[in-house]
Length: 121
Image: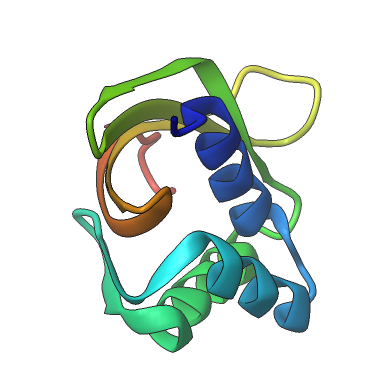
């Protein structure tokens, strides 16, 4: 049985990890080698491109962190969860919902939607 909360939590851990070698380690453990990421602003294929996307977001928002919002849900090989991005201790100004396709308990693809983005972010 797939632990959807663990997968979503590890996904958030990945986006918050600032050490490149540790990010690549999480990617190799939690994502398939052919994994794909896409949202309205960016897309990447494979660990190297996904890692570069994450590094770019961290560079753009150096004082922000991701957090899960609510409980992940899913069925079969599909997972849905919401997240917030912002400074610690306040309501996240940026929010989204991601849909994951899993393969053998690992992320095969992510399709991300931005639910709330302030002007100029």
